[in-house]
Picture 1: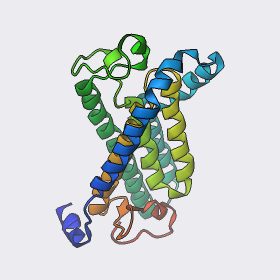
Picture 2 (picture 1 turned 30 degrees about the horizontal axis):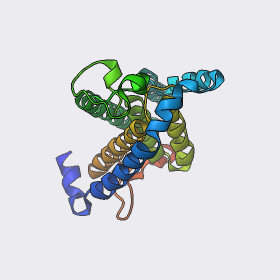
Picture 3 (picture 1 turned 45 degrees about the horizontal axis):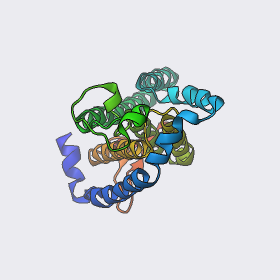
Length: 246
C-alpha cells in the first residue's frame, strides 16, 4: 500500500476544504436566519397525509437499511462474479470488495462524526420549539430532544448517496435528489430544522468525497483527477481484461 501511495504522491492535490466550508456555512446561516423559525412554528400544522408520506420516505435513510444495502451489493456482486472466468472473477471480486469497503467507510465515518457533533452542540429540536425556540443549546445534554444539529439522518443519507454518485456519476442527479428529499422529510416530521438538515447533508457529502480522495491516493477504486473529483474506476468491472495496475 505504501508503494501505491508513493507512486501517486506527485499527483496529490490538497482537499478544497476552505471553499467548501465557507459555502456550507453560508447555506447553514441563511437557513438558520430565514427558515428555521417559520418552519419551527408551522411543522406541527402540516397536513397529516404529508407527514405520513414523509414518515414512509424517511425510513430509507436509516443506517441499518444502508448497511444492508452495502452487504447486498457485495453478496450479489460476488455471486455474479462466480459466473466469470477465474482471472476476471478475481479482479471483479476485488473491485466489489473495495466498493463495499468505500461505501462502509464513508457511511461509518460520517455517522461517527455527526454523533459526536450533535451531542457536543446540544441544540433543541423543533419538537420543543414552544418551550425553547430556535436558539436553545445544552451541550453534552445527551437527551434526544437536544441532539438536533447536525441531523444524523441527513448526514448518513448524504454520505451514502454522494458515495454512490461518485461511483456512478451517470446517476448523480437522481442520487442527490434522493438525498435532498429524504433530508426534507426530517423537517416535515418536525424533528429537525432546515439548518440541521443542510449541515448534515453537507457533512455526509464531505466525508464521502474525502474518503474517495483517500482511496484514489492509493489507486483503489478511484483514479486521481487533476482538475476535479476522483474518477471512478468501476467501469473496469465490465471490461474483458483487467488493467495491470488494478
